[in-house]
Image (cartoon, rainbow, N blue to C red; front, top):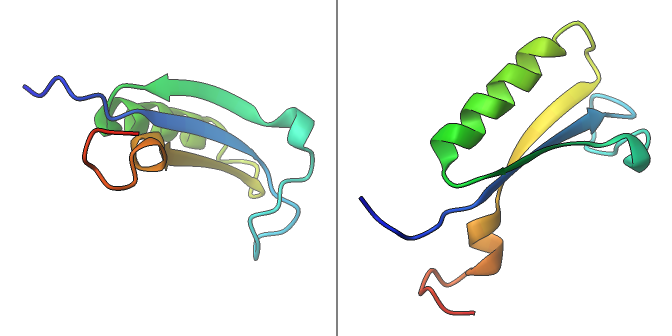
Length: 77
């Protein structure tokens, strides 16, 4: 098992419309959490997406934070 952290952020919110990724109210964003790997982030994302399925404008996302923190993938800042 690799000891390299591959952090993922799960968050969501209500979109203004279904054609764009603009949130209705940034103050109402639901920050689900930061997860140590994609599998656990996907599990959290899936649970939130299923819990809000009745609201067509609600969307949740998984952000690959490790790619933002280390875009070259060399383990260095």
